[in-house]
Length: 140
Image 1 (cartoon, rainbow, N blue to C red):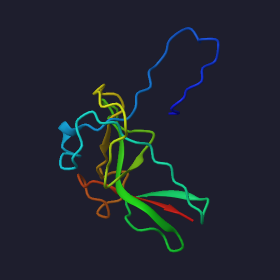
Image 2 (cartoon, one colour):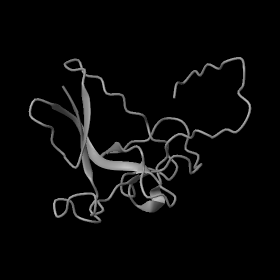
Image 3 (tube, one colour):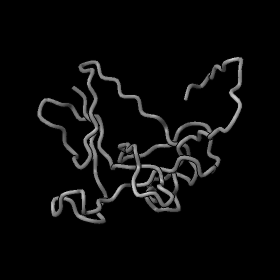
């Protein structure tokens, strides 16, 4: 989100949803040994490459395909499903997380959690149920 928001003059009436910044959930122990505090804001990552214009996130890998350059590696994450079977969007969380400057309030807004494999639609034994899925972000 931009640091200097601009608003339209007219407010849309009717039902609305809220947008929250991403926060670390230390209680889930995913980030427990990282020096982060519960509720620390997650910074947005902007990939900029002087050599390439294509960006690719590869779930299940820690290395890039030949000809691609690794920007960072981590683990696949998605927002808590609250009883839903699947998420529609996954992100690659850096394996070395940092906190964003500013807010440290714990709103329990967007809380990313690591994604684990579930055999069925995923081919097993290549993927193992209960194992955290790694990921890598590559540019070309």
